[in-house]
Length: 149
Image 1 (cartoon, one colour):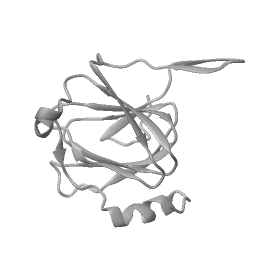
Image 2 (cartoon, one colour):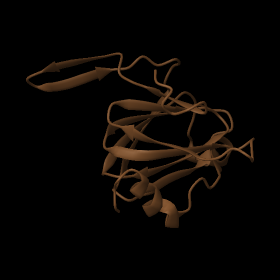
Image 3 (cartoon, rainbow, N blue to C red):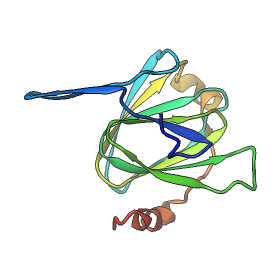
Image 4 (tube, rainbow, N blue to C red):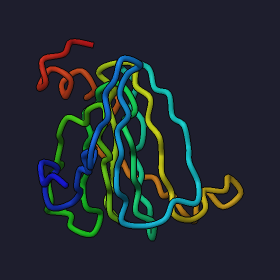
């Protein structure tokens, strides 16, 4: 587990990888069960998130691609925005009540690993809007990592 993400979040790297002529397999150890899996394909230049989960921890596996992951604790108005690069074969773990957003520097496939429900009928119970980054700020954040969108 890496602390590259700072105190608000953590990054889980593969526990081990297997490589042969067919390709790679990466194995991760998770701290809790997964009851739902969401596939989130995202296009280069897209912005996703800008919300928080009141009770659920969020785990995003970056299956392929690259994004700037941004977060901000909603209970600390003085806290700044934390940002780091999330890469292929990493899981970004976001604690409850930490607002988060992602800016995609490449076409990216995320796999959302959920312990609990993400039913559309109760969306407002498990996901609350909170602006971490405005759409007009996408280019500025990308340039911080040497990418022009």
